[in-house]
Amino acid sequence: MPAWIALILAIASETIGTSALTASQQFTRLWPSLLVVVAYAASFWFMAQALRTMPVGIVYAVWSGLGIVFIAAIGYLVFGQKLDLPALAGIALILAGLLVIHLFSDYRAH
Image 1 (cartoon, rainbow, N blue to C red):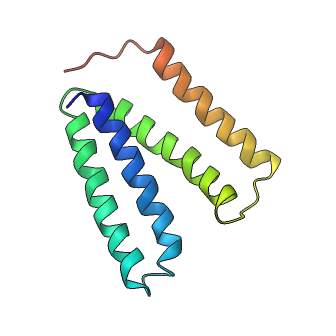
Image 2 (tube, rainbow, N blue to C red):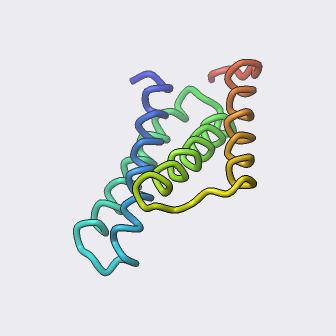
């Protein structure tokens, strides 16, 4: 599996797991709680696959950065959580940082 596909699947799994944390109501609901565990396990497995050829700093920056952006969007769209101007500015900076990594970084796969 190509590293970028593994990383995308890791991000998707992490986003599902984090979203299920809210639905689990502090692990008092069985099925959302199981989804949290399975999704995080899948996320770390896919991240480990990406780490076979990508540097850990790049993998973790993209995984955590996009995870933050997606969870903020899900919080807003699904859970009705509001984002104020400083939050939106911070999210924009995260996206800008990811673009810098993608467009200008000369990292070497190992």
